[in-house]
Every structure is written in structure tokens, then in C-alpha cells.
Length: 194
Image (spheres, rainbow, N blue to C red):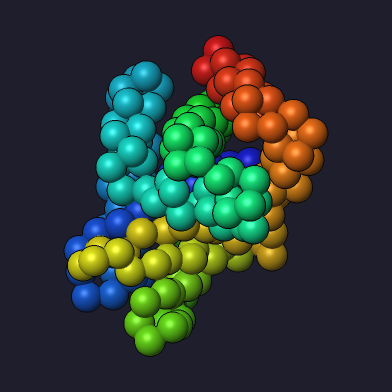
């Protein structure tokens, strides 16, 4: 169940204040696992996970790595960038929250971290159990923002979230402009909020 892995991966894009990116990620993963394992309603779980996501995820960072050079050359106005970050963030949340009901007490194993760029970037390496009881490799890409670490991308079995959406969004952006891309994101948000 790669979709299940993806839900956990994206919902665990986090920040926290701690000694290392791995420890930061562990704290939030445990919070989210606790919510998912609880006897709360799906609506309550969605609300609590949404709060964590909105509070701790680097939305702008993922938007920037998703659009790459189109961020600079196609989205020239800051207002367009902010609109894209908001819609993209809302879409990611709606899509992955729609998968919460598939959680089956899956395990997460933290394997280590790689610190890069003079301590300003890191990768946290994990294995996540699928619903078929296989372990999938999931790497989290983090950037240090002040005293906190924020996840700005996730790679699942060699496929980055940013690359997946770049392949979908950039052609729309080039053909229909920012309004076309925002409209597409609105439709996707409505689809997954049902």
C-alpha cells in the first residue's frame, strides 16, 4: 500500500526544537502515530493531524523544490507564490487526510541521519511498514530554519514527492498560467475533501 506510506510520509514533514533532525522527526512521528492509534473519530484524527501539519510543515520549501526554476522565472510575483504555496499545501493535506482510514498500526523504523551543507540540511532515513507487512524505504529531507528543522521533501522508494508533483504542475503552469494551476488545485482539493 504505497498510498498508506505516502500519507504517513507527508504528514510527518515536521519541525521541532531538539538536538538532531532524527530526534525532531521521532517526536512528531510518535505524536501522529498516537493520534492514528487512538479511538478518536476520523474527523477528530484529521483535525489533530491537520493542526500538526499546518504548524510544523515547511509549505514554502516544498513548493520551491517542486517548481524549481519555474518558482523564480514563472511565478515572478510574490502574491502568486503565496497563492500557490497555500493551495498546494491545502491539496497535500486534503489528499493524504483522505487516506487516514487505511492505517493498520504500521511500524516505523528510524535508521539514521545524514547531515549536509555544514549542518543546514539533513536526510533522515526510515523504513515504514506497508499494509502488506513489507518495509519501504522513506527518506525525509530537512532544512534548518533558525533553531528548528523542517521537512521540505520526502522520497519514497526512490521517488520524491516534489518530482511527482512537478511533472504534473509545471505543464499546467506553462499552458494555463498561475490561475489555471490554482484552479486545478481547487478541483483536486474538493475531490479529496469529499
